[in-house]
Image (cartoon, rainbow, N blue to C red):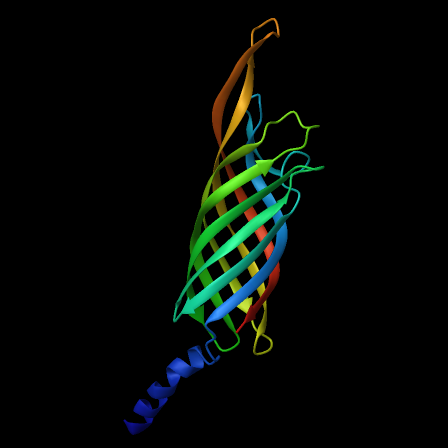
Length: 193
């Protein structure tokens, strides 16, 4: 019985053997697959290209509270040519730690801004993003780790669209909304202190 009690005292250290650091900062890069509805109303899964996201970069800062991780991240990238987007987000993760890594799952909510060049036929847009994600952080050393992450995001975007008469004469503008679902895949580094 004493041996069993002795082993039970060390089980939590086996699952969470790494020294807990309170803060982590990260830098990730990746690609995005998107469910996009084109102008004909046809909806399909595509790899973002041209007017859609070619890359996805994110810079993050997290504070660890035992198994809970709370932080901010800023995602951004290009949409082809000179067009770009940025999205500051609040993040909450639940972590399960092991000796040299942890896995996590959580959610994000934030704002999205798309800025397009004068050459684009799309107007600038803004909106809101929500989503879920899961990933892992592997620590080969004490402070520097490798991060792999995927998830699902839903953007609700709004744009000012020009309205014309059937003969092509301008009528004015109208604010229109659309929803976009996408799957980001990313890899990066985390530093804890």
